[in-house]
Amino acid sequence: MSSLGENLRAVRARIDAAARAAGRDPAEVRLLAVSKTWPAADVRALAALGQRHFAENRVQELSSKAAELADLPDLRWHLVGQLQRNKAAAVVRLGATVHSVDRPPLVEALDRAAERADRVVDVYVQVDLGGPEGELGGRGGAAPGDVPGLADAVAAAGGLRLRGLMAVAPRGEDPAPAFARLAEIGARVRAAHPTASETSAGMSGDLEAAVAAGATVVRVGTALFGARPLASEGPTAAGPVRPR
Ligand SMILES: *Cc1c(COP(=O)(O)O)cnc(C)c1O
Image 1 (tube, helix red, strand yellow):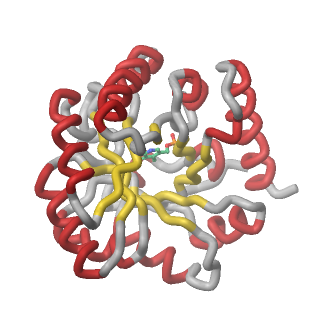
Image 2 (cartoon, rainbow, N blue to C red):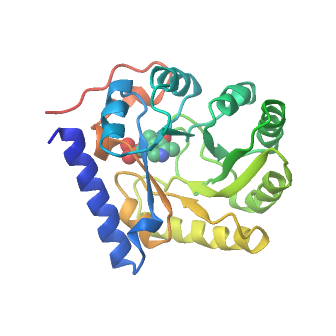
């Protein structure tokens, strides 16, 4: 089996084990393959192994990969990186789910673009769980106190569908308390918006803690594709190298 195939199997096994350990059905947890910095050929290879959902953190890279893979109609794209208002229309055209909605002007821009394109865009509100900024090439979401209002704004926007909350755990500390805070905020948002049932949390290093805290979507890059060079998180990306 290819290393991508082995990695995919290992990540799925981790998700299954974490779900069972938490008394959850593994089918409740969707795997999002974060393909940023990796070539479209890797996405194609994972797609051939049954992986359907892929995420990028930059709109330009998302656009070019989606164009290269336009012959695969079943692929579903997600944007997990910071989004500028002037790129909202491009994301909407791609039919991508946006995990990084963190401020009212972005809600307005996405809604306008969606209505213009006659589409409904799936949206997650990104929550800032603390920790240093800029680690993942952007800011880390809305302050917890601003999340309910932002969720209300998304839910009230005709062109947007509120799916739930997204967050990145602060690096260098136990992720469990951060994911517990996220679950609490999520429960509050769901009390007002019962269909906002998703929680997008957990990455290569902490997906078990996220699943234990109720994540329904885990976003995994490194454990599937290999290590990215540090510089690849920013706009001056060098090419990634998959270790042998
Ligand atoms: C890169 C990225 C991931 C994947 O992180 P890994 O540690 O490589 O699994 C998940 N979420 C976001 C927002 C990212 O930018």
